[in-house]
Length: 96
Image 1 (cartoon, rainbow, N blue to C red):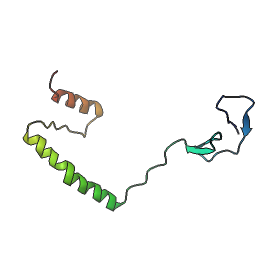
Image 2 (cartoon, helix red, strand yellow):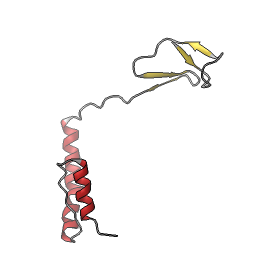
Image 3 (tube, rainbow, N blue to C red):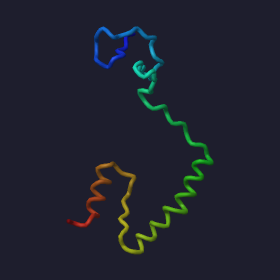
Image 4 (cartoon, rainbow, N blue to C red):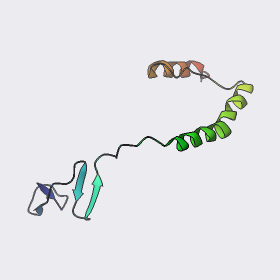
């Protein structure tokens, strides 16, 4: 396979290179390989998920009551299609 090492498109400065690994592109001008697509994320271990839930409970969850007590919390059912969620949010926003 031929890769252009100049960035100028087809021309005299192309070289033959071994095919890159699947999902990789070769940038020979800098000698770098970079992923064409991100690697798939592995599921988080149970202790990581547990920690994230603890942090949410301690830091974010109290804000729900704070805003609810002040009458400025707009609750929307997130278990519906995106367009319906958007419509619900817009219906709860003050006109202006």
